[in-house]
Amino acid sequence: MTVGVASAWMACGAATAPTKPTAPTSPPASAFLTDTVQSATGAVADVRELLGHVDPATHPDFVAIPTAWCAREGLMLRTEACSTFVAMAEAAALEGIRLEALSATRTFAHQRSIWERKWSRPRYMGWEGVDIARDILTYSSMPGSSRHHWGTDLDLHSLESDDFTHGEGQRVVAWLRANAEGFGFVEVYTEDPARTGYLPEPWHWSYMPLAEAFLAQLEEARARNELPAFAGFSGAELADSLGIFDAYMRGIHRP
Image 1 (tube, rainbow, N blue to C red):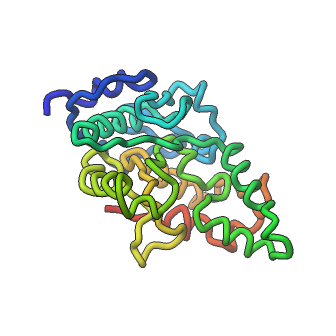
Image 2 (cartoon, rainbow, N blue to C red):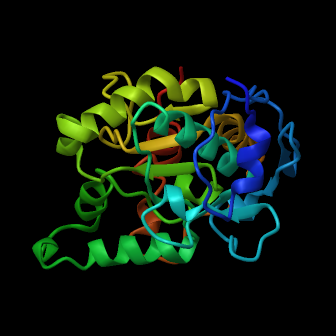
């Protein structure tokens, strides 16, 4: 392999033909600061950004994923995560595997719209709020708690678990499970019976060199009682009793 991640870094925001990349060296996931998080390549976040209060379209640390590697225009990631995803997608393409991003960064408002649309489903008529929340939390995060707020996480190929059990989806997830960790991407919602929170999501992959640091940032803020309470959406008052932080935000697979 002769072309490094630098070519992919420059490609973010524009479509390019695949070149043969190398897996980048991941910065340490534990490198974080008290009020901001900084990776080895300079990406910085503050707590409000990590809770989804960020406009990735105007934020200098976010870039658009090249259209060659996503289902629609306008999907954004932090620059470091984007460049590494492009390198990974190029490597997969050389083996006949297409990695297509379906979803990437989501703001608080975006996640709230998903949550509220589900909360208002007719089938929930007569349900207690806590039962509605638990049902939605099967796969969807409360606004403010989603890893998609961080600019580090992607949904790839399909949002249906069955699509990964055969055909192209099976080939995609097999390639990812064999190779993604070398690029810093991890399948965080696995079949691990010891893991709490969401059901398995074979489509959800997280760029851990940044994501681990960002989760540590939120844990530090929580330990200092500086993490804002969940608010601004239906069922927000249930967050603590449902264990949103401990069971869901921390309920991930780590390699």
